[in-house]
Amino acid sequence: MIAVKSYAALDKASPLAPLDISRRAVGDNDVLVDIMYCGVCHSDIHMARSEWGPSIYPIVPGHEIVGRVSQVGASVTKFKVGDLAGVGVFVDSCRKCSCCKDDLEQYCDEGMTGTYNGYERDGKTPTYGGYSNKIVVDQHYTLHVGNFKAEQLAAVAPLLCAGITTWSPLRYAGVGKGHKVAVLGLGGLGHMGVKFAASFGAEVTMISTSPSKEADAKALGATHFLLSTDKEAMAKAANSFDFILNTVAAPHDVNMYLNLLGVNGKMLVVGLPPEDSKVSAFQLVGKRRGIIGSMIGGIKETQEMLDYCAEHNIVSDIEMVDMKDINAAYERVIKSDVKYRFVIDLATL
Ligand code: NAP
Ligand code: ZN
Ligand code: ZN
Image (cartoon, rainbow, N blue to C red):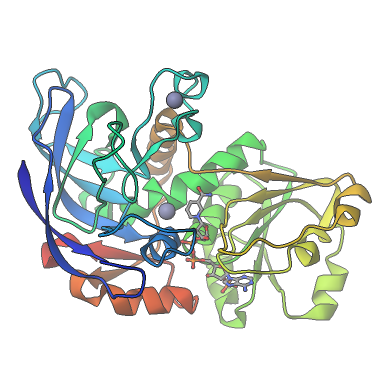
């Protein structure tokens, strides 16, 4: 076993605090990653606080991990000691179902093994995430991030969740030149969604509840900014988009946004508010609109996204935070007050 330092919540109401944990010894197919940076995803908060149902405690959140390989198992061919490595939202899956075979491990029939708040394939060993200084992961579920510049590495971490989560549905939908795409919610996911949709050639509108974010939205690649509290502007924008990428983390009236889609328009849902909103059949039927959900992306697609980002110089816009300040960072995320992703510097743990 490998002794590891972490930050954990002991129950849904307590703030995160230091906790000593242990990782399994490095197996034949495993890599040991010394964690350098870990992004703070809103899902970390949802799960630390059991907002999606009871979590497994103690919980060590964190699934946007970048670090350096410090040990490899005997059968590891994908990495060598000293390589940079990334770990995202899952660290294992059944490897034999049709989803796993089709590089869609995130939709594994038996359920993916979450990087934290999950159990290893034995069904009883809890997994612990990246708010920690070391992690042991099977090589297949570990990503290459060595082609980014050294000074970009902290900003690469959020690509492992926020990046792939917005990349995958935009790619699946074939978003590109000639499409009018709205991104709903300018947070961690939303800011990556704007960057990708713009990079793919779409005309991007940022839909936000925060008037203060207009200039940033445009700097990120949006051509237009729509304030969702401006009733007149919302009425004018009715029936105008081909796609809306919905990244909202809090309960909201989804019908108000569906109304902005044109004929055959599709809402790509990635946000996971703790309470569902009720969809009006009339909003869908009247314009043959559709709703598609999407969860992160498979390992192959995540690597493609990372390689594209390295080539096109796309990383996250981040605020660095010390491990001890994580609870204050959570409060700011909840207030939609982060530009646009917190990343923990694990050197401060
Ligand atoms: P985040 O940084 O908190 O961003 C969410 C944004 O939603 C906020 O910045 C805010 O943007 C907007 N928003 C907040 N409350 C709103 C409301 N009541 N009505 C309309 N907009 C509101 O969160 P995140 O890390 O990007 O994650 C977003 C959601 O995606 C979370 O629920 C997370 O769990 C989920 N998620 C899903 C996947 C997946 O695989 N599908 C992966 C990762 C995360 P404005 O200030 O611009 O309004
Ligand atoms: Zn996430
Ligand atoms: Zn499977």
